[in-house]
Length: 110
Length: 121
Image 1 (cartoon, rainbow over the protein chains, first blue to last red):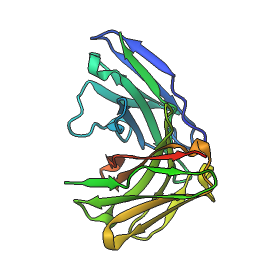
Image 2: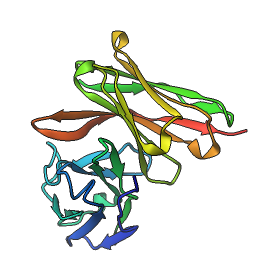
Image 3: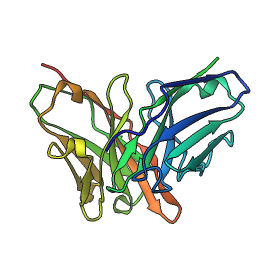
Image 4: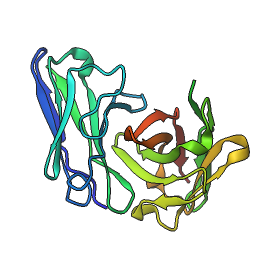
């Protein structure tokens, strides 16, 4: 199972919106609505930001949203804040009843 | 409250095995799948496998087939990951992760604090 494809880095200024893509295949992202997104700050455990493509866990800011089209899922962060600077990972359920992560995207808030 | 408390850091030699534990509390241990994820220093997250604590059945990532074993002891609400034939590139932080799988979806909701396993001669 190959890792999902994410851009290595994205950046944006405070107040702007950014989108991180996550591309898989029809055996993972495209085949199931079990796509999650995680935020990870240095030295910390990952934090779930989006699950099942577009659902936000309780306590996660509504500035975070998720979507999917075909084999590509996306995470959008609106109204960028300095605290959003972190690594972001997507993850998807697969047809092998396994899970797979993306390679991760470093978000820099300029 | 839900807690996943993992065992302490380990240092192992190449070729050895390591077994990391994850003690769950605050919920019914057999009611949720337990996954294991690792992260090498400066690298991304890597999914290793999951176990159904109720049945003991486990599914492994292809990369780790034959080298990893997931087990559990329901009497003490503890899950284990054992990795054999360790190599230097197995140096990583290993996390246990509780997943919810029901009508509300399929997602991780609690992570252990992580266990650093260092493989070095």
